[in-house]
Image (cartoon, rainbow, N blue to C red; front, side):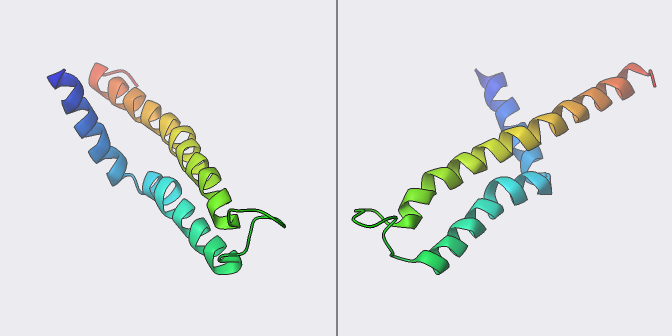
Length: 92
């Protein structure tokens, strides 16, 4: 369990150092939500709706954030691991 927490801590530090992850998984969805909030504000999602367009779009922005984090970070991490394994083994 302690090894898992150490690995999680190290991977979290590495992902924060990677500016792509921070940009696309955190800042971009926040910017989209701010823009939607400015454009639509408290307007209802559709006629007779009890929720606003922003409330309805929040789940989509969260899903985009998770997908961007997974689909953009995973190939980069695998490539970094592969490169470090290649260097440490002395081949290439």
